[in-house]
View 1 (cartoon, protein in one colour):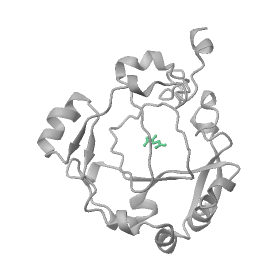
View 2 (cartoon, rainbow, N blue to C red; view 1 turned 180 degrees about the vertical axis):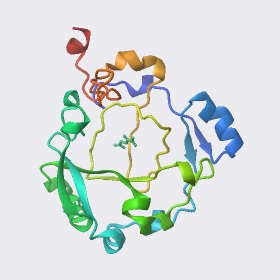
View 3 (cartoon, rainbow, N blue to C red; view 1 turned 45 degrees about the vertical axis):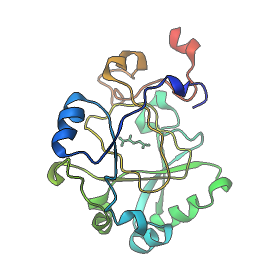
View 4 (cartoon, rainbow, N blue to C red; view 1 turned 60 degrees about the horizontal axis):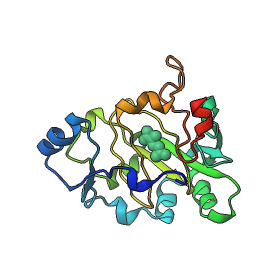
Length: 208
Ligand SMILES: O=C(O)CCC(=O)C(=O)O
């Protein structure tokens, strides 16, 4: 993020695999984000999920892949989520495409695909953390070509992010800041989406 002074942002606390009781009491019920370390140490995915392995087990699954010319998904947040463009391709072709990395002219994102529904074979490589129930949780796969940027938004359900490969930067805002995040109109399908580009905030526009 170019214009943000990262030293002024509070760091999210890290804690090594707390008990369920501590997790709910000290974090979940206080709406306090937390980085849990060692939570994935028994996941087979960590060693198993290479591009070749994934191609061999789910290579022929046909998927809508989000495409963006500016790395932002959706590329015009003012127009909302439905402005995202998709290209349909088999998973193996997607992996081959994004392995071209620097040669790519566009940015690609496999977003929010249910693992149990679309890729049931992969569910064996994960362990549900002890903090939530399998029955009322969805588990989704996200794979990006690199440098992908999802605009600030609000999710209606609590989230666990499990990073299997690569890295992701997450910036969180407390609910008290919602009004300052210029959400799109209430009662639209984009009410959970902010108009602020945190990467390049347009201060003229926001104060106008
Ligand atoms: O990781 C991302 O790019 C977005 C994730 C997200 O929006 C979500 O899990 O709801």
